Picture 1 (cartoon, rainbow, N blue to C red):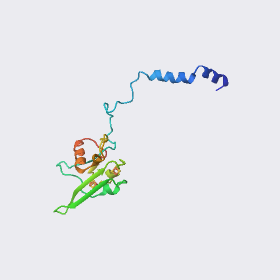
Picture 2: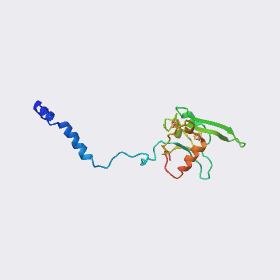
Picture 3: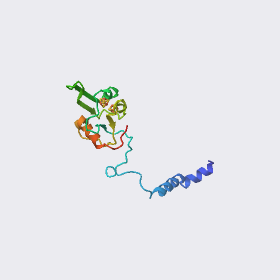
Picture 4: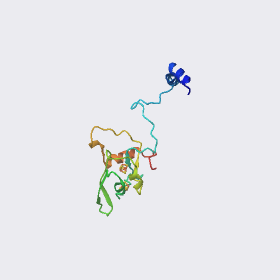
Length: 155
Ligand code: SF4
Ligand code: SF4
């Protein structure tokens, strides 16, 4: 840019005019921002939201208590405690996810050999208490029940 051109652009506030042109061009366009929480975003099925434990069609829990999800979890936020059933199969006494520690990496879901664990589109997890962010087996099964028939992360 020559010196004269630069001088003319400076005295006529060229850069400001360019900015104003863009402002007026887009002033009446539909806004791209959303008024959350009134307007909810559309979350794609592949998003990694709250985990869910799934059931067989007969209602039986799919989880076989193998513990692989907990072993793969990089933040050790899955706690599983098991005992033995009379028929020598494993029973899950405790299955909890400390969601505050979770990275939502999805390794636990990938590690599950029977697809008992999945991730859903639930993203509204904010809470005022730490206790409510400890997701128990019942809460994770209930989340799974909400997503029956819907597409989830690893379906
Ligand atoms: S998503 Fe990642 S961090 Fe969260 S429970 Fe699963 S493996 Fe652990
Ligand atoms: S890896 Fe799957 S089957 Fe094994 S304990 Fe975790 S959720 Fe249950």
